[in-house]
Image: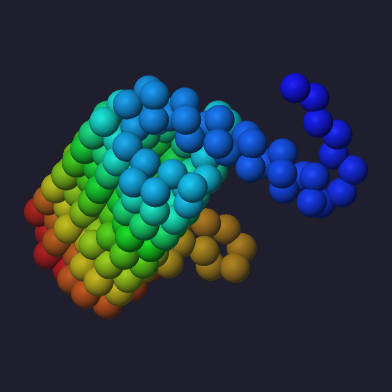
Length: 183
């Protein structure tokens, strides 16, 4: 079928058609969309089978989600690589450059940008992680922020494996926190 787009109403109709096709394909490929009509998918998103996507989720461009991951409601993801069995959200915001390894947990009101989180690391709530490398099994407490920009340039924060970052920590980059450290 061919459809002309002459105004914003036509554009919205065309988008609805594309979204319906993308959702259908995802479900036929083994993705669970709990409420398909509320999930928005980018055409180039790569979503493995056995992924569960809850209602009201946006999967933007350049996203890869590995087998067994779960994306909870009201999460917005773009330019992220999500490992197997990771749990994201609800209300999570993953921005470009986010790489999450297997079993990572990103909870409610957590925003990430340009980070790598090792296997089984977690940031459960109220956190901003930008320009950071976080080791496996690290625990990032509520209210933690990586202060990565000084007004001129961005710097990296490095957190070692199994480190514990306590609540309301402001990590001013550049900073290196060793494996097993407690803040």
